[in-house]
Length: 204
View (cartoon, rainbow, N blue to C red):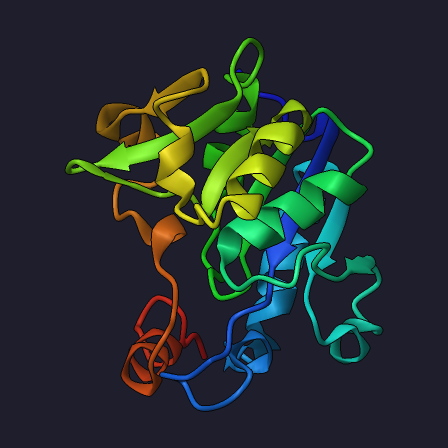
C-alpha cells in the first residue's frame, strides 16, 4: 500500500513556456471551473510536503500559496526549469510536472515516489516514449544539469544514458491510470476545448 503523502519530497511545477500554440497563458485556463495550475497544485499538495513553481513571470503566481522561483540560467527549455527547481528544493527527491497537466493521478505520483530510492530519475515509459515532465529527479543531479546547460545540451533525455534511471512500465502505470490521463498536457486551443468539454470533466 503506497502512502497518500510522501515526506521529504518537493513538487516542482514548470510554468515557463511561451504558449505560442495556445496563444494565452494556459496555466490559468479553466478546467471544470478551476485554473489548470490549481488542479496541478491541489494534486501535488496531497502527495508531497512542499511545492515550487518555476516561472519567469512570478507576479502571475503570487496568489498561488506556494514558493515561486525564476530560472537560474538564461536559457530556454524545460531542462533549465528542472535545474532551477532542484536548486531551490529543500529535498533530495523531487517530482517535476508541467503546469498544463491538470489530470495528475495521486496514486501514480505516490507509486513513482516510492520507487525513487537508489535512482537519479524515475520516469514513465509508454510505447517507447518517455514522460520527462512527469518524473522524479534527485537533487544530486544539479552538477550534471548545470554542465549540460553550459554545453548547450538541453535535451532531458541526454541524461538518461549517464545516470541511474528507473523506468515505470506501462503495466505499472495501468494499475493507477489506464487511460493515461496523467500525461495529457494541453498545448493548443483544440486540446483545451476537448479537455474542458469531456464527459468525465463536465459534471452537472
